[in-house]
Image (tube, rainbow, N blue to C red):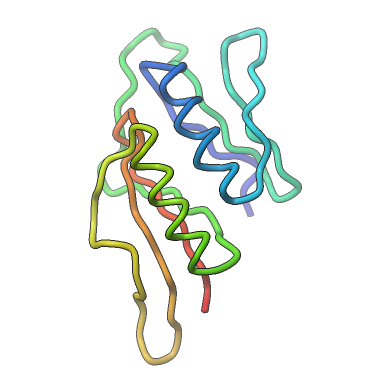
Length: 125
């Protein structure tokens, strides 16, 4: 559905360190910087990007916005969460665990990245 998702940052070094650690737990390669100072995580299913805002204004997180990444199993979700906290992420929402209803169960974890963006990882049970 999406070709890419791009989020803003005010500290590229901290954000790249955070997402390099976090996304490698999901099996992705470390981000690649381009000549404009943007960072790209490239996968067959799409691209996740980090950028400083091109208008020169500070990056802000979106209220009500969440970016979700898929995980292969609940152990990966747990590891993703621990790695995120160890690399500058902060807690938000409930602790990692099962969510959903009787028809569909998900194992999820939520974090805020160093720029305040809300992210999660999900294992579809």
